[in-house]
Image 1 (cartoon, helix red, strand yellow):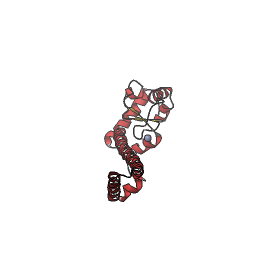
Image 2 (cartoon, rainbow, N blue to C red):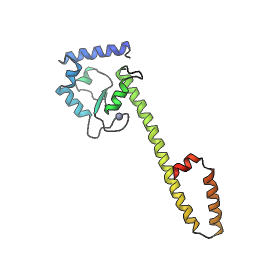
Image 3 (cartoon, protein in one colour):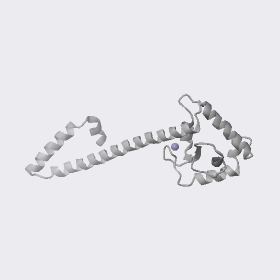
Image 4 (cartoon, rainbow, N blue to C red):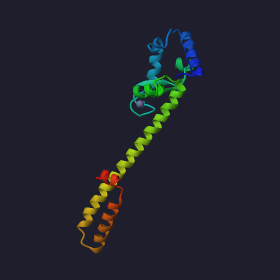
Length: 170
Ligand SMILES: [Zn+2]
C-alpha cells in the first residue's frame, strides 16, 4: 500500500510527465525519450540487481525530472521482470513506493547471496570429501603400519560426521 508521501510522489511524477508532454506513464514508456534512456541503462552486460540474471527492465528509484528526461541515470536500476514485479508489491499484493521497492530489491539480493554462499560451501565440502575418499583408496595400497593406523582413524572420523553431510559428500 502506498503511503501518503508515496502517493504525492506519483502525483508529482504525473505532473512532470505532463510537463514533458505525456498524458500518461504508458505514453512515456512508449516514447523515444524512454527508449533512449532504457537503451543506456540496459547494456548487454547489465544484470538484475536482485538475482544477477540478465536485466530486461528498469526500476525507477524515484521520478524526478532529471530521471525522466534522461539527465540522470543513477536512480534507474536494471532488473529482471520477475524481481521487478516481486519488489514492487508487498506480501498481500499491494503496490509499494519506488524507494521501498529498491530496499526490497537489496534485501532480495542479500538473500540470494546467502543462498549462493551456502551452495558454494556445499560444493566445496563435496569436492573435499571426494578427494579424501581417493586418498583413502590410495592409503589402502600402502602396507605400512602408519598407513593402516591412518585408515583406522580416517574411518572413525568419517563415522563421527553428521550423517547428512556424510551422505551429501558422496
Ligand atoms: Zn532478478
